[in-house]
Image: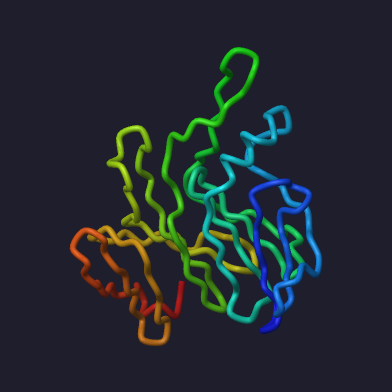
Length: 199
């Protein structure tokens, strides 16, 4: 990607999962992608499971990542939307589909990745881990940050925070992570281990 390209991610169909626009908003090209779930599940249900995600772009535009909110899955792509790798997430939580009569339907069980932030070396992902069935309505944010290597998708660190945050940013040069809380509208600052320069 460059300063004149806009990337969009669509709900359906999977044949047009990634859409590239020029600066005037015209579609330049589309790239197929995959949805969560296996091919025996109806596309509409796989699309519903895959509809909520965060999109993070590498600062130089060389890669981007999709972080799903209904499954613990982080997909890393190159600038042309070619799948490079799946990040090595620490928890195995797949999208759940239950058979109802003759059909499979998506059933949300877990709240997973809520937001993300990217540096040139690392992808930071805010993880919730809340049980959707018992969480309060509108539950957002989390207290755990997963740090992945952009090149390999390797999990390099899990950060445990003592406050639930929603949006966040990272200043690797100064070694601080800043997070906003929806509970008290506060802004919190967390010291990164090792000053944030070495994982």
